[in-house]
Amino acid sequence: MTDVDLARRVRDRCRLSGRFVLRSGRVAEEYFDKYQFEADPALLDEVAAGMVSLVPEGTEVLAGLEMGGIAVVTALGRRTGLPCAFVRKAAKPYGTARLAEGADVRGRRVLVVEDVVTSGGQIAISTGQLRDLGARIDHALCVIDRQEGGAEALAAEGIRLLSLLKREDLEGDRPQEVGPQGG
Image 1 (cartoon, rainbow, N blue to C red):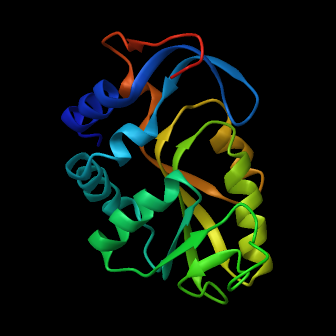
Image 2 (tube, rainbow, N blue to C red; image 1 turned 60 degrees about the vertical axis):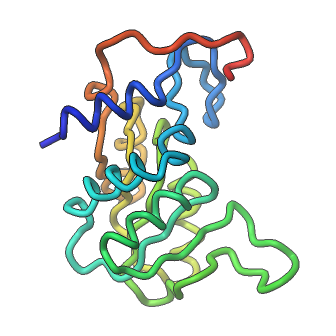
């Protein structure tokens, strides 16, 4: 059951209207500026509290995707006590040169954590990379599912998408309007 008050506060904080190019390349008239709820410690903590019950039983590691998933996974890790891995889009050629920093994912049941899902593309890419490292992944968890095919695309990859909020939960009052650059 969705907390209507939390959905309203997230919507009021991060839903924008205008013209936005999404990571998938799609153009949208509505955008969920996830950095707005991620940058608000109290609201981010409430989001994480709402996500705790969605973490599948048996999860051993929470893996947050660069960049927005990192704030969410850290807050969720504080709430669940589970160790976190921070997943880069590509391993850096210096330092540890790891794709996933923090908790070891090899041989462990990993939950991929993302902020907003549209097409599911980055989750699919990162899950494939984590599986190559030996992670066992069959679920992903996001704060907002835009309901634009991401869940279906991920299901085809053997990943069940769980979400705290769906686009329909965030409909209602008019979004903030922004200029043509989208921010």
